[in-house]
Length: 294
Image (cartoon, rainbow, N blue to C red; front, side, top):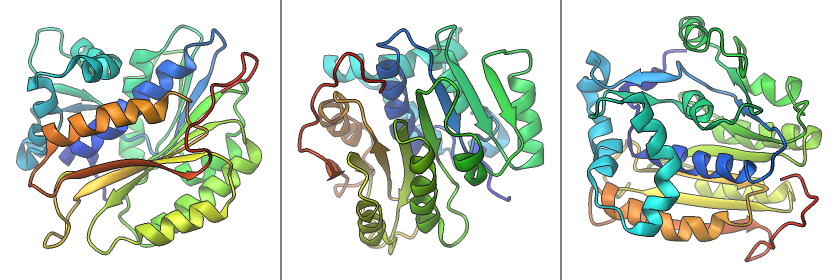
């Protein structure tokens, strides 16, 4: 309940997570059918990078600040276009003052038929999130522990959806809760696309986490990681990872094109790294048939 994302908004981990989320949304929109994004740990939705909190850490300067200033190669620019266009929309006079959290980013990318369910447990943050989307019929904001939403709010009535699980990792056992939460959610909504965020830091149980996910025997799980510095002599966040269940067939190739560019832009030392690989599934996912709802 003490976590405040404003101190970290727009940092390298946000860039990675939101760039991938934008790709997932765009893939869903290749079909006319409506879909729903379920954001289990939504935060306040919109962040003022000129605020005292954001200025205190300045993490966004080494994240979205670098990306906005970079001369992107054409393929990476095309892949980042939805994400960066959303940010430009929030800053119509130029510059970089406002940064979208995941719920705001999703809403900026929506078509009229798409929907968002945003969960936030912290009372103050819930109120701010509610005010942000007040009057928006495409968005439902609920004051709820996001872990509970993985049962109570699935499957969505649209039968198509992206479930973003992005806990703050401020208490012990969050890696285990991610595995347990995915198992519970997948039983209820096996056709959904799940995006699970996790931190990379010194002594984090990443190998055990991946093995626990593999033991769920979910057919297709793609993993991507981006580290901006070594974790050897550093106790803070050195990088982050995403596990995508039922990923778009295009995503692995997109990650192979995008991650090296982000690594080069966001690197904070010479030990930065990236990788994208299958935790479970084919080495190259087939293109889905026309009648599959992915």
